[in-house]
Image 1 (cartoon, rainbow, N blue to C red):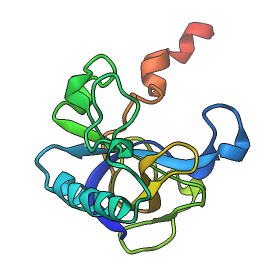
Image 2: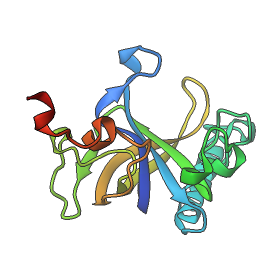
Image 3: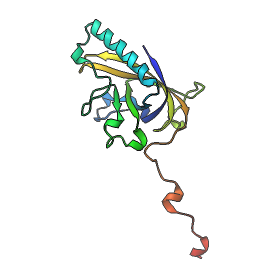
Length: 187
């Protein structure tokens, strides 16, 4: 069942064009990393949905207990629904990720992307970036075709507010070139 996690921060959003990490465009997906503050209550909502999906997968014998994706990713593993950023400060700098989890959501189909009033947002609006605050609708599902486990599907994103851009972005013109020089210098 789809759930909406609220007031989270997006990181590496690829919501308008699919991305293929291995260069194989047949496997390209829309995706975003979702930064969730620990203790926000959102992780308990995700845990409840994970538990329901895991129970159903086990009851229907789609997965065995050993095939379940862990809820919290163990250190050194590539499988897990939530990544505890505090476990790997070299990869997840504390100034951005301290006290947070990351949830990776992906979709083969383009997700809905809207503003606070549910008006469509396009790539040309430049409104979605790493650091934006959003509500994100996801669904957890069991899979057993290529590999086995529980994955997170991305249905839609609603921009709630602007946030502090992640990664610093491009410096301002003043930072790059300093203050304008006096025109008289060239006369």
